[in-house]
Image (cartoon, rainbow, N blue to C red; front, side):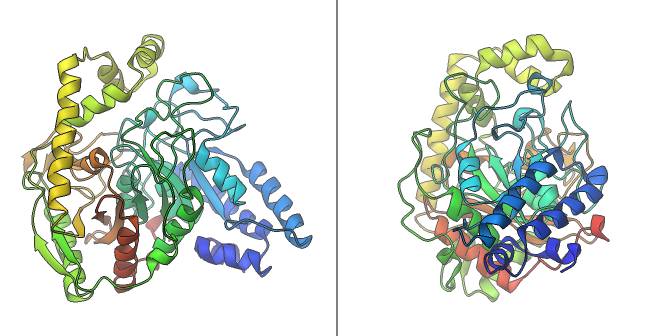
Length: 480
């Protein structure tokens, strides 16, 4: 196969071909390194590429295959690791000058599992500083660009992961999601991304016995999840990283009691689904509203579901979300970093950590989260799935935190994230799937939310929609 053909393969196919000795892991790795080297000057998806490490891994894997040794389920599949996730021996900068030379001495749980499954790590993917943003720029590295239009943001905070997957640098990548950071770039980059249920995938909140401000700090909000060009590829990654509990994460669940790949099978005919195009209060771009409404009609017309427009009924919980972030951040450590690096840190991050949060603000935020969760579980008694836009707007220009206006309304910089962060507050499984494209070729995401712990239903619904409205054949402009 040519390099382009190998880069067009999905992860499931690569793993099968490598296992069957029909393609060499070295060939696959070299193809993706070549794609990465060709596109990095435009996209800046990988802040720390590790091509030599990838080659070493691929050659060692090839020797094991030729010797007849057992190999893992991801053998030979190239992967990108978000730069907020610790990697032993590979620097983890987190988009901050504070960690410019930080090289962890141990792996995060998910990295351990991916290595054990014989995935080939291509490098670390770019993020906004400490992930406190939904876009792709930081003070340290070149700004990550959107593969569909290089003048626009790919979304964040898993910005590099989204751009890398959409452009074929790797078939899938790891993201983390504390307020939408898997789903946001998946929507803006025209790929699939899933935030599994809270506790499905272990999160290591720190490293060893020390505290690292800004790294994996949002313990009750953050989820680690896959980003891929197909639903099956994300299920394959979840079969590895979501394979049961780990003592480093006190929230991890037992199980799972299901097979991740089996979740893709079966129809969703007759399922009762809620559609909320605006939560009842959010400003939404008319193009997004129309594309998502048409995607919802696919569920009703083509997949046999019962779709009703309905809202969970809460007031905008956005201020409370940031209160929970403050509560879960190492404010003392972050303030010390701000004192040392303030002139080289992201301004809104400095403002956030220096804000004099009161006890009442933080406890009020906890109360709001409880109210949101109570509204949601009661709402989901009536519906097996909830559909919303993933984001309120299509991709917008780089170097801003969000649009000033949406549908004629003046909005705060982060209001375009209205649909993602509430699902971090509830911990439910949620995925972003390509709903369609605007007339000027920009991707729009559909968010699929499941009931508490019902990851299988989210995957089954996503796979059913993918079969009804496939998108994998669409190629971003950077590849043309």
